[in-house]
Length: 342
Image (cartoon, rainbow, N blue to C red; front, side):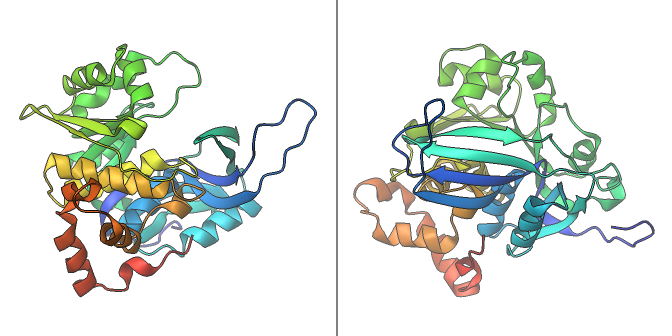
């Protein structure tokens, strides 16, 4: 987007802004190395990470997704740039490259059903000109991190009717300041995991954290790993829980981002709250079956294969609502969900 270049505001379903990571994922070790020792991984994967996890996951579900970020012109930025440009439904006109930026890098080690991260770099954000009101998309929904308050671009979109989904990340300082939640009244929904929810609300149970969050935001959602997810609609008082979808976990990297993408899809589709949680849990459960975050986000082909193979009287009984959606997708765009390039 050069100076003087004309820019027509496109329409997107979901707008995501944040730091893009180059993720190197290692797996297949029996243990972490001791000091001075070396351990060889049996598997590896390269994947876009950071905000790209949820953006790619949303795009694979068919949401027209706008991604705003910045990467360097180094070899890691080269890879991200190439891979992201191959993802269907992903609009990158708000993403740029700069020789002054060092692409943020994360090495993720998948071990014993969990993961450990070692990262390098600094958070990078699109320049102010990129997120100027006249350059923003017309978005049905946007994802916003609460850590830095409510940015001007998000205020502008909400004034136009965009649904704002709030989120938070890990607090390396360990302070978990409650002031982070002060802006929740400006949001339509808030999605976080149990660790984040309990730390920020100073509670000791997911349900207790959910109740505190519901005092601040119309729709609060807390993910609870293998125990599933719970949500409360503060406007109606509806409280819903949904079990996790059982799957063989290879790497949980990006599962929370994929949950968010599934929940955003189902919310924009107007599904009932329980179905939204079930669908988001399904998407997250499918994503942990492979290495990496974005590269393992499920397509509709993946979800359809799961649906056809699942025993209806047991786990699949609650997912009957997916049948019409899968049939509609097969009839309208039979090849859209088959492309899985990153």
